[in-house]
Amino acid sequence: MIITEKINIQRTKHSRLSEVDFNNLTFGSIISDHMVVSDYNNGEWGASSIMPFGNISISPTMLALHYGQVVFEGMKAFKMKDGSISIFRIEKHYERFCKSMERMCIPAMSYEQFDEALKALIELDSAWVPGSEGASLYIRPFVFASEERFGVKVADEYKFIIFTGPVGPYYANPLKVKVEGKYRRAAHGGTGSAKCAGNYGGAFYPLQLARKEGFDQVLWTDATDDLYIEESGTMNVFFIIDNVIITPPLSDSILDGVTRDSFITLAKGMGYKVEERKIGANELVHSFQKNIFQEAFGTGTAAVVAPIQTINIAGKDYNLPKVSDNSVSMKIKQQLLNIRIGTAPDKNNWNTIIKL
Ligand code: COI
Image 1 (cartoon, protein in one colour):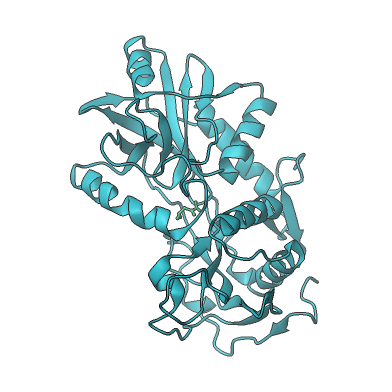
Image 2 (cartoon, helix red, strand yellow):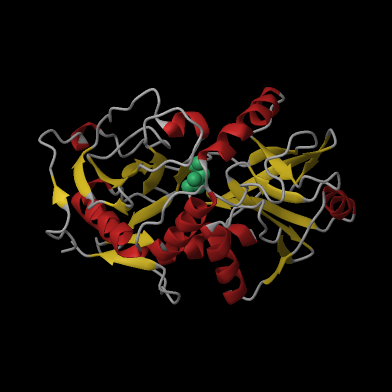
């Protein structure tokens, strides 16, 4: 039992669980019964409470709405084969959350508080964790400047919330992406490696233009004109060329993806050669021409491992071989899923198990 007396818990009297069609889960529309809330005031984080998920009241002057101090995480919990629940890589997500908060001048929260509140919430809403393959409970911790005033300043008050929701696959089909040549997601020295809300808002306009042209996502390039690939939309990106798995190296303009890190660890463990190095759009074109470009895919908490079917570079479509269960990316994805549901050994201690 994780739920402790340290966390004040107010249980819902009107669970919405019976309204959910667990056979038709999409991403991002269904929210579980409860949420964690904690407030930062007078220089410290207050105790966490768990309460029924619901609206919060805010002032139009709330600083986050004006100056953008908002940071979030995306995590997942899974139903294991033996009926218990696993939460994936809490520590790694917490570390990234702290780094993002630091970059946005948001005061750190202790690991103990984050971990305890998260586990209590998942235990309380354990019935919301879906059991079907490819489905999971998405967990969204986030924090924002809640102080009410409109002078430009680093806020002195913050609100931390965790809510969850059952989700199905993020992308239903292999993706068609374009190498974005005009707009940039992040520049060196900027906030690209932080999981702050503005990074997503700033990406919408180029994405909207790309969608009008028939693409699902863009491949972001670095802020030089060399078109080095950085990320794809909400994912880190990988290419398999001549049997080598290649992904751009982490930098201050790339998000340090938890799935990226897990994928690299598993790939190496399964004997694949992995290179974290710069890769330009030109190299992709040359690899296509030499017929050695085998796979491309994105990785992310929401997307897991999402195959890319077509890459458009400077207006020309390059089509990759169709993915199958035998594709390297799919074999590694399956291994990741097996670890999460307990059918493969968790050698790296990534799972936190909630026994019910
Ligand atoms: C995730 O993969 O968890 C993300 O945060 C990306 C997106 C859903 C915003």
